[in-house]
Length: 269
Image (cartoon, rainbow, N blue to C red):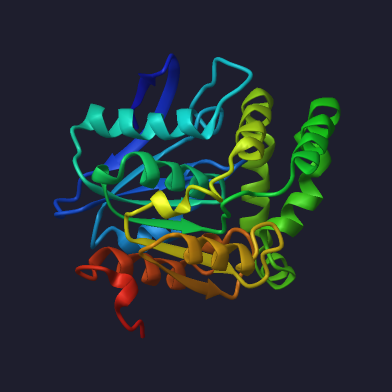
């Protein structure tokens, strides 16, 4: 699994060129790594080439600064595509990855066939909320917000039925670089695409979780209402909908990727 240098950081990625015509890029959420996509990727390998990466300061990707912006994280994606010589791709990002997807769709529309943004918003949370979280983890560490993270990410039913999955995700969360987590918290805090959504001309699928209180279905409706060529679907899941309902998530991603033309105009069954 290769690591390269992008913007002075070690950048970890996996590229599975499976001989398909199209490639999809997956972008992880805050506090996770590329393994969060494992259940979905298992279902999509027979249809698409798969490119995944660890966002700066997450997993095996390093971060050399105390601050970062969503624009810089988006530029990392473009640099990776250029490095691999990959042209136009599909992009799927969840939460923070969804913010990156919005930025990419606005600033590099020529590089993307379609974009899927899941469990995200044009603006996630408030500055006060993010500053409080940054202060909490800076003083007490990531372990201090473990319980709250589990409750935000997974429904009670999923936590009860799949404790081993939740435990594995939280273990990776605890091993996230504190510097990276804080820098990316600030990036999410400062991102605001509410006025720029009309500039996102790439056909876009918005996925929300009905139980998601972090990025609610109303946030999804706002995104779909502002992005000119978009459609919105809701899954009965919490914030990490791709992990709670991987089959449903993968079905929607594949429909978006494989439906010719503006899939948002089509009837989805």
